[in-house]
Image (cartoon, rainbow, N blue to C red; front, side, top):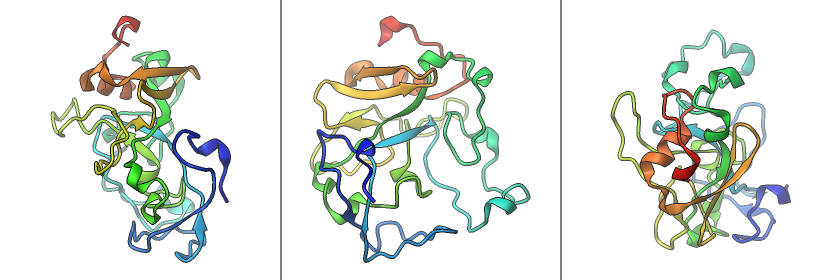
Amino acid sequence: MAVGAFYCPSRREAIAYPRNANGGGYSFLNSVHPDDRLWGVNDYVGSLGSTDCGNDRSDITYDNSETHTWPRPYSFWLGVIFERSEVRIKQVTDGTSHTYLIGERYLDPDLYTSDFAVRSPHWGGHDTGNVACTDYDPIRKTGRGFPPTQDQPGNRRVCASGSAHSGGFHMAMRDGSVRSINYELGWRVHQSLSTRAQSEVIDDAEL
């Protein structure tokens, strides 16, 4: 089912699209996902933080999650929305008005209506359709680091923030406010806004 609120009206029509059978190849427990059906998709994703958005998918049920040995510890994730996330307001010490929560994701315009627009069902678990990150870890000093980008034909970047709009992209902050962010803010500032508690407090003048 296509949910209109999950679609950017500047990008594509709010209808269901075909799914590429090899676009993810992941299974989802407790759900039915035949590849020959049309799928609703989404243009808005959670802020994973600054770390690489590779997923730690595991075929376990919710009841078994507490005893499961996860590949990455909870402390690995620096943003607000990630697997097993239970981030509280008081843990967002960089400031709730300057910490990303949910926002627009980058997408190659060539994929807007193609079968690769559906890497996974929205909120189904696979990383590229559910979260965005800045691909730089300030603790471990790893990652390439990339800025938010306006949608560009031929650029297949995944897990990045961006939009179809020329002036910038929109982000909902942890305090519930929504900001229009300019693409020119620089990836370092963008990275700082994606973390919740790295003492990277951003001034409004930098936005």
